[in-house]
Image (cartoon, rainbow, N blue to C red; front, side, top):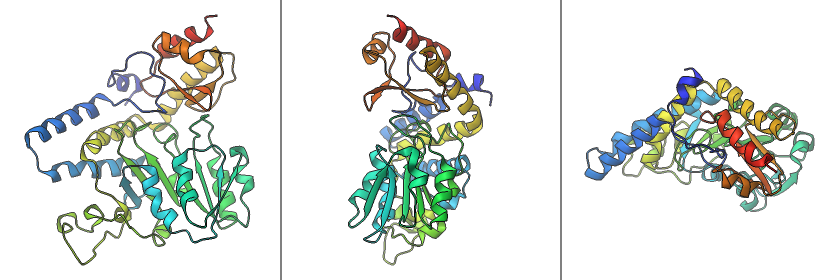
Length: 344
C-alpha cells in the first residue's frame, strides 16, 4: 500500500507528536473495536468469537519481526512477559543493562533475588559485555532519547561471551526493521508504534530459552487445545510459546489485529523513511544535526509551553522535549511545532 493512500485511514488532530507515548489507531482498527463494543453491549457474540483477533495479531507480529509464529507469546505488558525469564535466573546471575533505560526492561531483573545488575552508558553496552556477563538487556530504541542501540554489535558481543540477550523493541517495532530472531527474547508493547490499544503485548521466546522457563501464569489460553482447556487437571499446555500466553483483554486485540496488518501492508521500511524524514525536518529546522530515529529530543527554553499554546502534543522525558513521528504525521505537524519553537 502506498503511504499517501494509507494516511487517509487516520483522523489525527493536527500536532500529535507523541507516538512514543501512544499511537493513534487507523480507522479500520477503531471501527472494528466499536463494533465489538456494540456486540458486547447486547450479547450478540460468544466469547470465542473474539479469539480470532489474537491469532491474527500473533501472525502479523511474527511476520513483522521475522520469527516463526509458534515462537510468539501474547500478554498484556512487556514486564509481565519478561517475568518468567526473570524467575528462571538463578542467584548470582550477572546482567548488563543501559543506564536510564525504561523501567519495564530493568525492573524484572532488579526484582529478581540474587541477580546482579550492572548499568552502563548505552553507547558502551556492547563493549561492557565480558566473560562475567550472563544476560544483556536493553531497549532497541531508547525511550528517553530516541537513540538506536547497535543491535548486531550487542548480540555479537553477547554470543562471544555466552550471554543471553533480551530486547525491548516497544519503541522500535512498527517503524524500525530488525531481526528479532537474533535475540533470545524480544518483547513489544503494542500501544505505541503498532497503534493497538493498551493491553496488547508480544514476546518472541526462542525455543532454547523456553526450555528453561516455567509458565507460572498459565491458564486456559496457554492450553494445547483452547476448546479442551477450560477445566483440569491434568496439565496440558501448548508445546509452542503459547504456553506463556495469558487470557487476553478481548477488545484490545480486536483493534490490534487490523492495526498490525496495516503496518505490514504499508511496509516497515517505507514507514521508517517517512518517520525519519519528518524527524530530521524538525531537527534541521531547529539547527540540530539530523538523526536516524523517529524519536528526537531537544532543549529549547519554554518548549513545552510554546508547543501547548499552538496545540502541539509532545512529551517531556529526562528534562527534554521529546517529539516522535509516525505514519500519520505530516510536514504541517512539523512546521506547526517549528513555528512555535522558533518564534522568539
